[in-house]
Image (cartoon, rainbow, N blue to C red; front, side):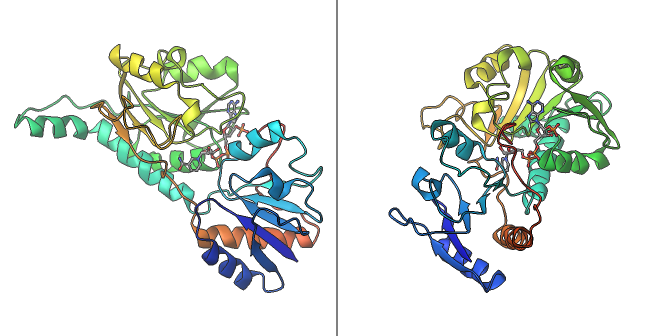
Length: 313
Ligand SMILES: NC(=O)c1ccc[n+]([C@@H]2O[C@H](COP(=O)([O-])OP(=O)(O)OC[C@H]3O[C@@H](n4cnc5c(N)ncnc54)[C@H](OP(=O)(O)O)[C@@H]3O)[C@@H](O)[C@H]2O)c1
């Protein structure tokens, strides 16, 4: 069995050794331009078209991340990039759920207890009690109730905030009020104090965090964008913050990455920034999943994690 690997910045030697150890019968090689020899499986991130197009023998492609928007965007421009009938898989959780939980809990509690405002007071040597937020009114709304959205909801349960989620199809999650579809979006937003975005980036969700949506949240709302930069219309966030509709935001992802030096987000006192590392797949967990999925595929089963190319996630 032959496996080809391409990732713009992962440590290829570590991956080749780890996969070889888990799949001793496989020959694993780093793909480089000009390599058009047959391969059974391809492991990829932002793959050059030539890596997949016309690849003989391909039985499956594994995206080395949770989101597949990069691959699907290329597929729209090169519809023959993925040979017909070859399934595309993505990484589900593989350590990312816990990291998303840490990120969300940190910010939600910080905003709830107003720690960022106390930090500001400290810089002014100002001793002043701020009024506590009401826990019952501090409702958390999660856009996306998939692997990571559900994980984040779980981590927020112990704190007693009202929880709600919005997805394409209805969910039955204990302790989380489910809203779904365009027709229930307005109702979901109007009861949300803290909005956490964990949607996939698709043709339906791009630009969803715009002025119109942000203005429907509860007054002085908070925004956590953990999914993809193009979900947020960045100027609209600045306008919503200037108008007092959004009090603070924490952003991990941006339209342009790295975020340009001159971008107004850097200097904004109420916007926290991290460099697109809210959650990173843990190599050992990811390799365990891929090895087990390849074994399943070899025995004729369809592993979990298959991407629906039409739906876009
Ligand atoms: N910043 C980072 O470091 C980082 C790390 C990992 C992942 N991510 C991002 O997080 C995203 C979510 O990951 P995941 O594993 O949780 O994805 P997932 O399991 O595929 O879940 C996606 C959720 O979004 C919902 N959804 C999709 N399109 C929708 C639409 N048009 N309207 C309403 N709901 C819609 C789905 O609804 P249904 O359940 O009804 O289908 C599902 O609940 C990834 O796509 C990736 O972009 C970011």
